[in-house]
Structure formats: C-alpha cells, structure tokens
Image (cartoon, rainbow, N blue to C red; front, side, top):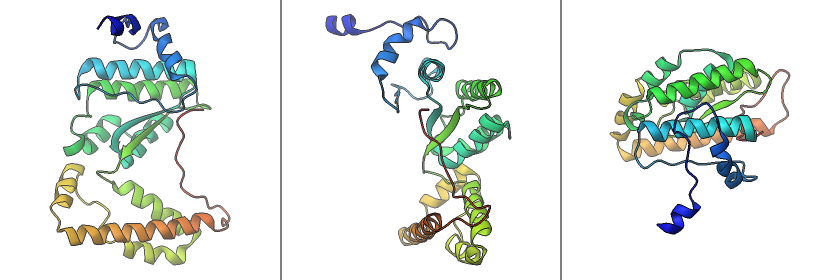
Length: 227
C-alpha cells in the first residue's frame, strides 16, 4: 500500500468540468497511445461513469482524441453518432429502445449527459467532430442492414436480390431485448445458418468494396479513435 500511495495521483473530483490540472498524470500515462481503455469495478456506479466522462473530455480537449466507444451494439452506436454529429434523432429514445437485456445497465443519466456534451462540442466544432461508437455485437439493429442494402442498391442494384436472400430473417423485427432473447433460444443449427449467410454477405460486400467504384458510390466507413 505505501508504494501504491506514493505512485497514485489524487483526483480533484469525479465530476466533469472545471480545472483539469489533476488529470495531467493521465495525459503522461497516455503518451502517444491512440486508444485509451477505462474499466470499472462496478457497472452503473455514478462515480465510475462521471470519471470516464471527465477523462474523455480531457482527452478530447487536450490530447486530440475524437471517438468514445461503449460496450454496446454497433448499430446503437450508429444511431447515437447520428445525433452526436448531425443532431438527428433522440438519444433518450435510442437508449430506451436499444439499451435492453445485455445492455440494460447502459441507459443512465450519466451516459446521456456524456452524449449531450458530445453534441454540444460538435455544435462548437462542426469541422472537427467527436464521434460515438458501439463496439459490441450482441445485437445488430435494422439500421445496419438498411445501410448495406442501400449501398448495394446504389453500386450494384443487380445484386440487391442476392443480399435480400442472404439477409432473410436476419434483420430484427423485435425490440432489442426481445430479439436477443429470441436469438439465443434458436436451435444451434439455425444460428449457424444465420452466421453462415452473414459471412457470405460480408464476403460479397468486401468484393464490391475492392471493385472500382461506380459514379456516386462509396463503401461504408467507420471512424478512428484519435485525430
């Protein structure tokens, strides 16, 4: 314990905002890293969530970081990112609809406050926005299927029926929590078939991305972590 006490740097507060001089040791520890991970001893506790927001704000404003990643569905990240970057949608509704079952500990006032801070930051810095990313695959919302099929429809409309066939029964028609439970209750062979068709769709999509672009077409992209 004495060694730990000598090495530790006390925080001024767990709440975001105000003087950030006490976070300078965090900056030194980050160094030239492009990804910073923060864990928590308990899920959903106020102080762990507010410290994450406080550190993220510091990394954005002082160290050039631009993406916040949360252990939630990629499709949920897409929905929240639309709000953070463009002001589209309602983050409270997104959290209510998507933060269910395995993500049930995520719809907190602290996470909502972080999303609102990111939106306000982007209002002030529209040419250098921060982004929100979901980094988990426990649920894949219909938004992602719609993006893929819309892309295929633009660049290779002749392949649209093939993707519809591969995606048959995959696009969720139930709320997030109900879908996750129903999926886990499916027979293993059925889930393996779903995974196989998803893999074939991915291979076909990647082949389109490698092919010469058609006029007006572009391949789906995601964002980085640091500027």
